[in-house]
Length: 390
Image (cartoon, rainbow, N blue to C red):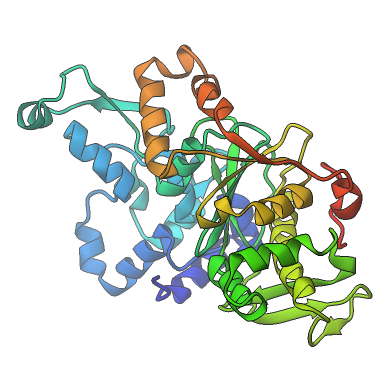
């Protein structure tokens, strides 16, 4: 992952009054990999190339451009990952454009709604691949916004991918951007937003403690979780094998006892294992709530990824969030999101039905795999209430 644009990140943050202000405008503090900072680097190091550039596209908008045979605009949702878009007005922020480079507004053109029909298949695509002349092309978006669509999420839901890295997708109405995590325009609801939280220490960290505490056996690991009470008698742990993304930069193992005192080790492996899983899930809930998410009795947790088959972990997820947990059979949520969005546009878009109504049958097919225990709210905090350390 490119981290060569720290200088440009500092420049963008300074242009608007600091990282918190940039986060409030664009939904994120400055990130080295974000497009605005990469463009700024190009302008500073290769000024002639920047000057000679007529248009700047993202991969998503460029792919759509190839299909329709003309340059199309960048969609709002994917533009959220550029550190250039004002997520409230859904227009480029002029101060940021000026900081990145002269004439950038013309090179980017106007950002467009993610639900825009950008055209029909070009003559080339019709002749070369046999596409129907009436085949419409919708605005393409990025993999993360498309994953939210592919999970068949609705307002109040949380998408949770438990893989090498853990990822949380949240549907928001009134976002509260933070210095960690991202808030972008929602790809399927123009009046809503999505939040994205990425955690570097996911399954590999869980596997490390499985190996050290459960002889490398998931069966023993799950038995250890089930042998301890919810709340773990007040013991909690945070484990970061690699510098974490949320919270930024933390590395190492941190253990605390019921008196909130640092602990070198816990008394038994069962305490260690539950401390890991509860700590990971409590962090996810806390960070989502800090960004403006409110749990309700109707909230669903839609889980994907390798750990989505582990019923002991899913039970902890359900208890910590005090919400029902579901899994879906369809793989590759980003690709499915593109397919669902294409079907929605082909049927007339929001003029005919909302995206949520279209994918309602898919949402209803999600499999219920865990429900909150009776004492979950008392242990971790009720929906729309303050989460508390057990």
